[in-house]
Length: 466
Image (tube, rainbow, N blue to C red; front, side):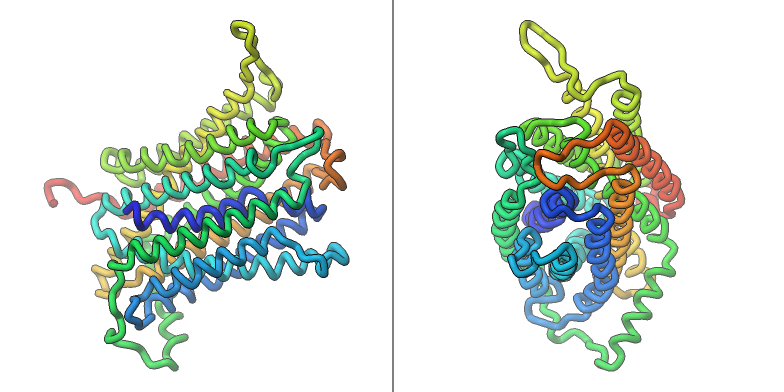
């Protein structure tokens, strides 16, 4: 399980690096309008969502001595590392105007998402195949989520200290070179993790050269039939609805929290690392708790508990900071030392939101694996790649929507992209609206997602029946 989860480190560095810093990079360093920024990222994510079911079908039907998953994991992982570096680098010949920068970023985003699809869909399907028991799936997905957060903490969280330490009262997030250095470091680490997971899980491969193969002219027909079967399957339907709503809310929070750190709370670089790192610790603890909660409350109950924690965390933040009860820079003098009480309260309840997400995400992935296994038992056909790709498609569509929503929210509240590092101050009304969306609206979105998961039909067998 740990060897398999190393692959999640590669996925985490690319995805969370983009997830956490792309809005800042495009608006503060490149000066793009937030609406254009949201459009760039969401367009690439939408294309990724459309191509992922195709990748799942291709992987399921691949015939090779390396099996169905590992060839794509290796090629896609290395390509993903290279393209992720290009993401943070805009060459001189593309800097003639805002539109040339826009089209370059669209092109690079499409490259990154294509390579990510090539790696992630076979990787996720391999996890579905490796673990065949009800609670074992939850453990595997929980451990995978812990590795995701470990890489997220060592990479994007610590990036505030290693790459964005401000000097001379300048906001380091406005300096393009900082993103380029971060991107190069993450790209090298991504390539290493991609190679490691291929090597360490290679014994799980299945030689598929002699497996039955459909005629080439039937490929499209079989793909469409497979997608229809999955979408018509009632078992995963509410998981898809749940994960779409939840992911859209998480993207909204994740995109805006960087602006919260920078503009609303006005944290220093080390405080940003503490605040950001606490989200990874929260999600990792949530993933650990999910392993313990599912045997006691089953998967649906564990998800509802996680959602309740997330909602409570953000609602308390709204009550503290939007009402004026707590000022962002508030501190207490204890024994002659100033204790940043606002930072402590923010970290505790902000990490609580992500702790709840850390419970919900791996459990919902395990729910999808259960639905895939139920389909196999009913039909005799193993379609792990297809189910994992539709699950990932749902997440990507939600991410695309969430990014557009984030850019739209920034634009609607009047957030202005700074022209230089010294012009990065927003009005009080803009900052209050930023907190309202990040804290209160995100809690409402999480509540709606819980209404969807209540209808999920698969549950643990009673002990008396085995």
